[in-house]
Amino acid sequence: MSNTTVMKRFILTSLILLLAALLVWQVGRRIFSGKGQARQRNTMPVAVNVAPVEKRTLQDMGHFTGTLYPRSQYVVAPKIAGRLEKLFVNIGDQVRRGQVIAQLENDEYIKQVDQARAELEVAKANLEESRSTMEIARREFERARALREKKIASESELDAAQAHMKTQEAKHRVAIAQFAQREAALKTAEVRLSYTEICACWEEQDENRVVGERFVDEGAMLAANASIVSILDIGALIGVFHVIERDYSKVSVGQVASLSTDAFPGKSFSGRVIRIAPLLKETSRQARVEIEVLNEEGLLKPGMFVRIQIGFSNRENVTVVPLTALVKRDARQGVFLADLKSMKARFIVVTPGLVADEWVEVIQPPLSGQVVVLGQHLLKEGTDIVLPNGPPGSAPGEAQGKPKPGSARGSKGPG
Image 1 (cartoon, helix red, strand yellow):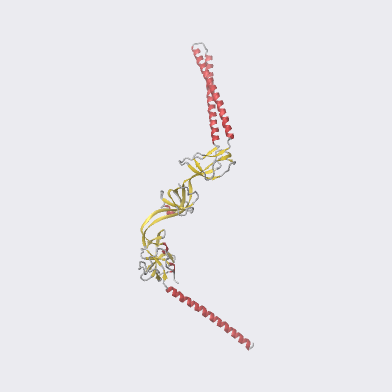
Image 2: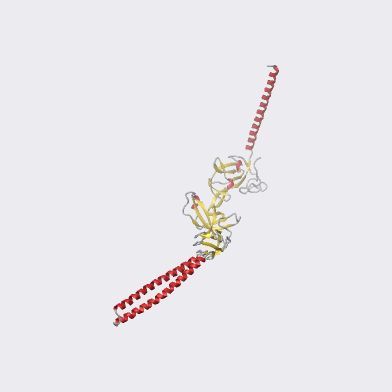
């Protein structure tokens, strides 16, 4: 190998080593610079907002979702088969109690009524004839008995007259039964004819209801009990929701409920609990609850999705902090208490209770002072803090006023 080749390899190796040394130096400098900046950041105070621990009265509210149903609903259907000749109502129409909804083809039933009426007339005539014959036979028997008492008629003549009278009486009873049978047949034919007029009937006192759905059109051949239209009572609606075991004992009949729906933003409707299921379904561990909602304006409709609020009870004079003050550290829930003398944050593990609006009850431990409501995600135990608006209650020149719970007015994180 020549000296030139050895020299080239030496120069190349030297360049590689030099570049590697420069690379290591740059990486080390960046690492040490980052650690220095981190130490510098850790020593910088964190800007936070605080709010006082307060004593308040909280209302235990139950929040549920449910669906609206009509107070009552049924399907109008014919009792007999036939062709739908006329349908007098449609979807959304108001219906009065007893109003004719539909008409079936009735020619055949009219003929049956006419035939039954004619047969009744025949039975009536037979009855009159048998009554007359029976009266004649009775008079003949009376005459024969009188003659027999005078020894004018024989015993056999009296027996014949008596037998004839009893025969006519039996025929009269048959005529009476036939007349009653034909009369019943006429009433049956008239009832079946009345079935061709299909009416909306219900027992409650309200006079008007509304057509919800139409299932057939005119001209359709209907079987007995085939659905024609559905009739709804929406003067009041039933809101149905389900409660879990935890809330089951809090719900009682008569409680007032407030309902809202996306169909009418900002508008609330009032109702009351009317029924509570006596069992929880095993599959869901939930119980059905029904509330009645008056619908005098007719705004609410069956099938609407509703949000329901029920006030269970009031908790008076409890220790509360803003809900935004709650944080988790190492799977523990607590708040950062602001020590305004040392200007440090102290993490306090708490047992939260009732949550109402933007407040949460603190059951344990006893708590007082100021809690951090903004900026706590940057805090840990003992972190230095700074209040951009100054200490609460400071002079106007030192502070801009006490911040509201959860507000971020005039504050920002470090950096």
